[in-house]
Length: 69
Image (tube, rainbow, N blue to C red; front, side):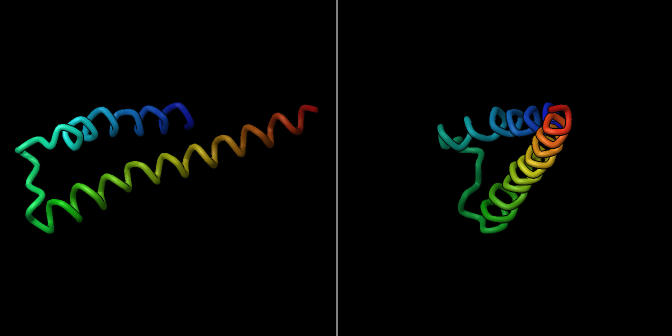
C-alpha cells in the first residue's frame, strides 16, 4: 500500500507540476470551475488520500516491527 501510494503521488507530481511551473497556456486559470474545482480540489485529493494510505501503512509496519522485538 505504501509503494502504490508513493507511486500515485509521484505520478501526480510528474503529470501536473511541470504544467503549473511553466504556466502552460492550455491551463485555463481564468475559469473558477477549472482552477479551483478541477486543478486544486481534485488534485489535492490525489495527494491527501495517498498520504493517508502511507500513514496507515507505515503505522501498521511500525506496529508489526514492535511486536517482533
